[in-house]
Image 1 (tube, rainbow, N blue to C red):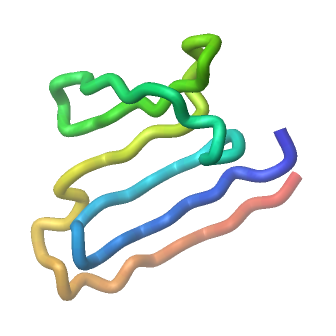
Image 2 (cartoon, rainbow, N blue to C red):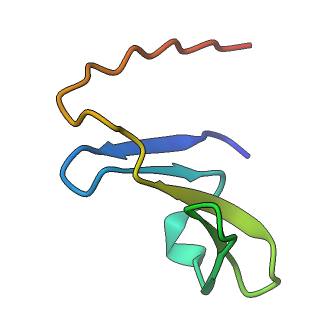
Length: 68
């Protein structure tokens, strides 16, 4: 894995996190906790989407990036 891609969409109130190329997405699985697992053809989780991330859509999002 080279990078993790994080996408915050304030309009749809979602957070997407990708561990692999989003183009490899083959199927999605709902967990029941407002989380959707995104899987490739081998059924490996390559990302997830969290629904209803913000209770207040006007919130600022503090982000800390740690590189090792």
